[in-house]
Length: 387
Image (cartoon, rainbow, N blue to C red):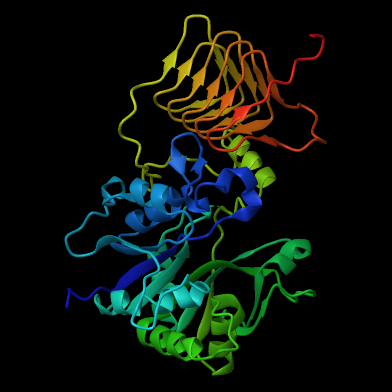
């Protein structure tokens, strides 16, 4: 047996993220590029590293190759430890056969052996597709102070949005007295962030019983939390007051990238005490050509800018050729905007090409954000006033 750990993390990173449409056609949501040099999973992995949680099981499923390759040994997040570190945990076959993870609870259940090999006191369950900066040690201290069986990280949300979340009702000590998964008429504004901390023995028993229940959806929010609450276990809500966002739609993804360009925005990428780390270590410095114009934008390494970029996010190894104009847009790694093209309020997928002289996207806020899939060549749409 490996040395016992106080707490290990299990990071659920197998989601397709179908609401992101073309962006997740070929890769899992946690592997989607964000903020120029990052991928969405960087935020949870960086939180683990900054919180001194050095053992992380990453549960993959949907189109895992790029995510697995990106994570590698975990060295980018200082998680390449001989006793712990990162482990990629895909679905696997047993003597009974094999199939996909049936739900969040089933995914953890099928990796109980991995958890047991570290004999941790607590298990922290995370999602790999949220943007936030959080010190998990504060949550662990809260959990231990209350001798909790399960602690759920929560934050206040507008009541009109509460029906989208798992909603907690707590007493004066923040002990959870009622829980409702996406209620039509929520009685509280305390929403689950999908971050759970459990005593290991409580987790093992709950998941084993859930796995044997053929009527269960094998989901933490729908099944495990209500069951533990019904058994009278000590469930507590840990109130988080920082920034947290699920960029689950094209609109929210685009808007969140644009928020990064606001120097007074709610979320800042830069922090000396809790940096966001990424596996970006091979591209050369960016190049800004002699006739280029760049204003209020983030430009990642390897970018070659010869045209105009205004209020945009430019990813790794992107090319913007002479005469091209990019405005209010997100260019994902390897994208290319050819000469004299116009990209406006759009998301250009990885290795996608906007054709020479073409127009992609619209400044009209009533129109949908234009999105191209990975590797797609965007059909030429002639600019107004031209044949």
